[in-house]
Length: 371
Image (cartoon, rainbow, N blue to C red; front, side, top):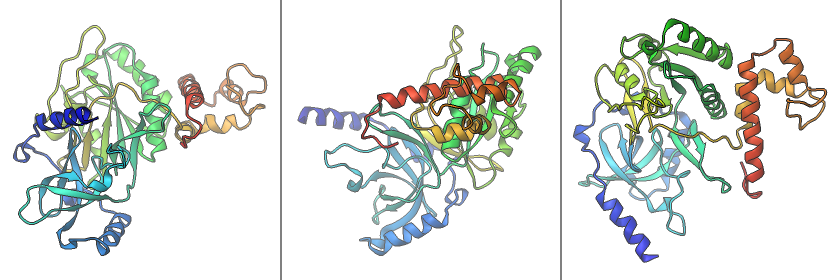
């Protein structure tokens, strides 16, 4: 056990964090929205806190390998976690640790460069993904965001409609507004662009905005900016190589984030974003950029599935059997509605695939896990 602890300590000592002076485009405290619940929770915490005069409200605007950067009304500084975040066995719970976008109570003693995050204040929203197999663990990717920009590249082969669909389910389950952003439009000819755009629009339906962009030509960039109003936050969600950092650089108007090449054989990219960062857009709100995600497993997101595909979920209530899979059973209202043109083939195909995935995942869960 001692050797494992020592190895962990050695790894932490080798981590070099970027200088705060070298970081640009960070949001100011006033760029971020502080709601009444967070203000009230801070005041309550302050009443019983020691060293209350050293406490401030702050937002976590950057995480470098788990090390938070906090912005307050008066300063920007690195912070560490209070011992109250540690479990009894000495390990840390990522569901409780501060995430980028979190509003926090942070203590900073006079003359100290670093602060200590004492409390994560109530999250207005929390974008999470499953990471715990049968143990019920979720990874919080960003907190207090309002919009999810679901990025998919054009011109690189078949568009991943299934990836778009599962992103919509996660966004809806977390109470966030999804916007589909198709990047690299300059790589697609007119025929391919029309085909892919039609498929995406049939999948997402009328309630989700779809924006076609090209960072090379500037097309669609202002339309994306319009999706992120002042004092709101959006998160860019997509795989490595989808053009997330390039899109963000175009929104900022300069090369602020590193970009990488993609492999020609599969159009996949390397991880160029290694930190979770918030950047302030000129004339707009704030965007969270996170490393590209290879997987977005769906476990316990039935509510999100129903919100993303409401007309199919409502039709399913009319099926003869409660456990209808909508594939072969008699009396299936979902298939009847589809044959009558109530929803597109793209929507039905993705709904059935994700519903089947969630049913199979539920069978592998520990029965004591509460979703």
